[in-house]
Length: 216
Image (cartoon, rainbow, N blue to C red; front, side, top):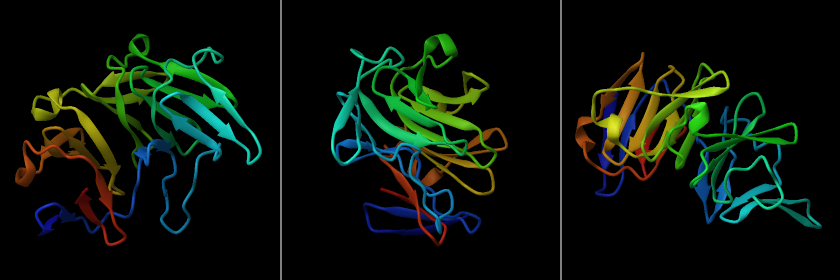
């Protein structure tokens, strides 16, 4: 990995084994769920007409809209939708402000929170790595899915107490983790901080078609 040029606002790191990845994210006031698994064949969520808002989920078919919220949908745990992310199995994961993460599968919603091991309900990033493991970044740590539960990724460095802001997977199986305390790379079960930006608040990350990881 080699350092890229900095213009004072953006800094890039070249990873020759990487390719574009965009995980679940918020965009323009609504939750956007599209992400390219293969940059030559971008995909959108299984329900491409499902929009996340701070007042629930809205399905729009071009003619009418239907709202799913706490008042009419028992499977939801929050109306505050922050992001949408579709995994490779076609399940849609809904990250919320205060209700953990919700899975949408075959027309059914299922919430995952403290009872399922996700001890922090503020979800800010959802991502699937090369091996298909689902990761959830929260206001108080990084979690990973194990069957129908979540477990805290335990570490002794700064990542342990950091607010996770963004996740980007790499084809080599590693995971880039942007946080309130800098940028980390999770590889082979260990986290490595990027020395150049320790204690920086990383707002977002993106990887271009040349494999350059940039802070945005």
